[in-house]
Structures are given as C-alpha cells and as structure tokens.
Image (cartoon, rainbow, N blue to C red; front, side, top):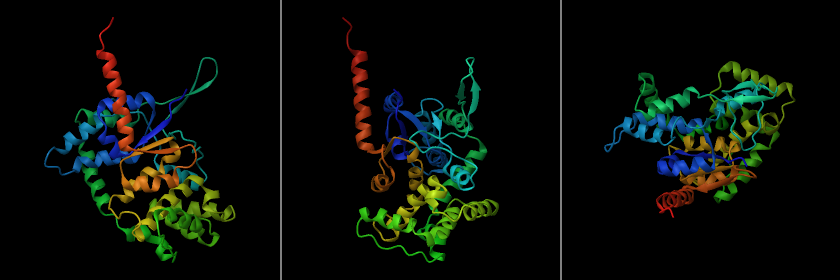
Length: 316
C-alpha cells in the first residue's frame, strides 16, 4: 500500500527530533517543498545569540536523514507552465517533479528515474556544515525579502483595479468572500494581472499568458489554469483576512502562505503555525487533512518510544 504524501512546514520540521523524523519517513512519502528549503537556507543569515547560523542550518539539514526525499516543483514554475499552456500535471495528492528521466525497462515498460537534484545535494552539504559563498550571499537576500513584506504590496494591482474586499465578520466567512470574487467574470482580468504580479512574471511571459487567455475566450481563471487559480485563492484568503484583521498580521504570513500553494500535492499537511491552522482547512479539499504539529509530534514520539522499548526488551 503506498504511503500517503506528507508536507511539513518549517515549524513542524524544526520541532521534531531526528528519531521522530525517522518514524515519519517510515510511514509517509516525503514531499519537500521549495519554501521549506528557502526558509532553512535563509537561516544562514539568522542572528541568534545561542548558536551560529552555520550550526542552525547544519542541525536542520541533518533532520532530512540524508539527502531528503523528492522535491516538489516550484509553484512559480507550475503556474507559468499552466498559464501559458506549456505544462500539464495532476493535483492529486502526489508530488509533482520537474527533474526526472524516463527509463525503458528490459520488458519494454516505462519507468521514471529520480536522481538526487542540486537541492538534494545541497542538503547533504549543509548537514556537513559546508556552505558556498553564493549560498551565504543569497541567504541574506532571502531574509531581507521576507522582512520586506507589506500588506500594501500584497494588495498591489487589485487596489489599482479597484477590486473591493468585503469585510468578513469571522474567519469562516473569508472563503465565501474570496470565492465570490474569484467567480465574477468582470474581475478575471484583474485577478490574472494580480497573480502575475505576485509571481513576478517577466513581460514576455505576461504577454503570452494574456494572449492565451484572450484566445481561449477569456474564461474564468479556474477554467484556464486550475492550479494557478488555487494559488490565487490562497493569496486572496490571506489578503482578505489580513486587511480586515481577521487573521494575524505578521511579516511571515506571505512566506507561510506559500506552503498552502503545495497542499494539492500531499494528503497530509503538518504545521504548528496559527495561520496554517486557520487557512489550511479552506484550501485542502477532499481527501487531504491538516494535522497540528502538537498531535503529529506526539504520535511520532509514541512510535519512537515503542520502537525503543522493543529494541531494549530482553530476548527469551
């Protein structure tokens, strides 16, 4: 029976011990999402009076227990491919890969060969406290970018298009408001423009997306590119919640929201983040579940204790 695909956010990944990670890897298929690696990478520029940045990243990388599992294709790559009509994939609870090779077996059947990627090799180096000069420079940029987040920047082109965001009274009303906006035909151009701004698409890619949207009859974003629609919905949920102070307004929210971009590619999402606890149930969809870190860690700790007990039990 295949193991269910699992995504951990950084709060969950960091909180679990190596032994707990070992139990987790035994029971679940690991899906490493790019935002997790970027957050770990950014810790190379973290100021911590207790430990050096190198020691922090080395400790985190060692919890992959090797090179780590499969690494999901970046959400930006997937959105661009889908929006331009150049990429197709299934959001069916399994990781989507962009680095693999087709291999013909002796019996003529076709298999997929997944070799360690540059990111997997970086994980191995980091676990040995080996960091390149470029990685150190990039880490500072990653931290600066994360700290530069603002609500005005997130609103961006939606404000320019004069898209109004009704006020939700509770967290549970946020998806109703977001879905109403997403299904209005007159707002599709504004939503598409906003998404391309958030994805930082270059001008040529924007032109290609615009041409395809026009050539296909200016459909709803959900029909043009279902995964891109999912990412837009995540951002809209965040924007509505933050703008009206229904969800916490933290500078890390934009980064945390990126984990939710990848939930179509897992069956279980684990996090200790309050924003994820609030928004994840709105985007997981059927067949996927959110597990709070405290529950997941307790379960893995129980497995660790049971394994330890079995290994120390006297033989008869």
